Image 1 (tube, rainbow, N blue to C red):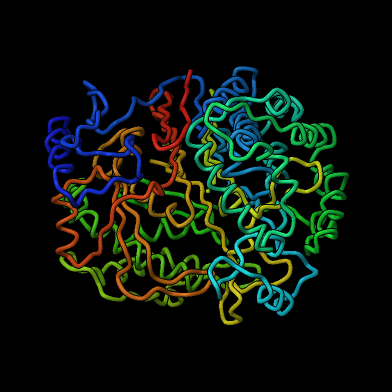
Image 2: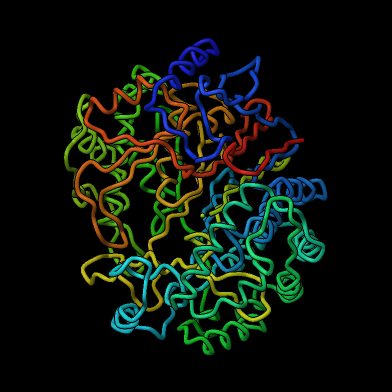
Length: 602
């Protein structure tokens, strides 16, 4: 089913006429009504009216990232003879400099890699573990002494939230298996940009300013034990402004050490020793021995079939199974008949989200420490039983986790790359909340992640904190195959938005016939509420945030079905995708219109 331009011109004019359509951001650039005197975007003569641009097409390779320079670095890497994995690592390294609001070598990494030689999809889990020297009792006691922004809440920043950063080890694990160019050459462009500097684009500048305000406040309150290093590295002149040239010579030195000394320079050498000394100085629990013990894990991807397409994710501790559950539930409904952008379609998607997220809260954790019923959660019979709980006409007042045991058989960046051999990579990397913990070790030029915030402190939770344990992880790369051939590498950034956003992309393309770019440009919804793996539940229906592109009829229809609907707040994720034509081998690449990035192909 394809959406005609005429339909979207009509539905778009209706969508913005009423007062219920709220602007996502409080600025003149975010005002959306054609009747309020604000200039609107020009018309496109091809494709849906909401599309911001065309996909990028090419035969030899493609890349899509959240920053134009990172995309260009990936393409240059391919043109120098690098593989899609080389290009992905080069782009990821660049994004740690260029988009420090979402990722960096202080964070974790997950990737899905299609290898055309073996005709197989490989998954790597590059998430780090909690420090061995801090027990659950120690952590709980220390958390009670921290003055958080909301009294009674748990700390989101500072050393207690730091787990071992896994990204660099994952780079080298991927490279040793699928790389071709020397790592020194792969990292060279980022080292050069870190030394010379480059202007900061508007969206990244906006997020950096927000991070500065939040981290500065938390440092003054004592939640972030040391902030001078982060201030010097990222905010020497206060919040960075759009167009301002940003340099990070400390990061250039750190990447140069890694380029020369490999992963051991980070996990066993001078970088590890600097981290250890810094953490001892500020009273943090992370030690050099924790870094030395770290290793990435190659894992078997998991999948569900959605209308003839196999959608793939990484297994827990990742939340990828949640995307598969949502799609498995929606598989029981005629989404094409429900109609694109309608209240009927969104209602089914939102209810699928609520059911899957209750299972997410109850079951997902590090499988090395807890029994996670992964197979049961995506068993077709179990998903059919979950779908039976959905009333197409009315929102359920309460939903709860199911019992999959009987079905058992045995702020983030995302990027995609592909090469002329047919190799395709979906890579996601994150510091977790915002820029991370607020902590930058002396002279290293990168911030540590605060992924440890995602642990629960409830002893009954499978995701309860334990020394050496990996926390529940939100970051998820996605992949789609068709008839056992690579079809698409894709993903959507943004915490709990990721399964919701990935599901919307798949539905937009498979059920509604949109191309890769239009599928991402289409307006999005986000549901908030229910239970969380970190602990705590918000009872009731929760809230549905809608971007301004939805018509008034959709908003009114959702309200009629019982939903509480609000306007958008700009927090709808960040998407990239590359699709491959199995007949011609041509690539179609797309990037997120809500970010600063670009997609290129050649």
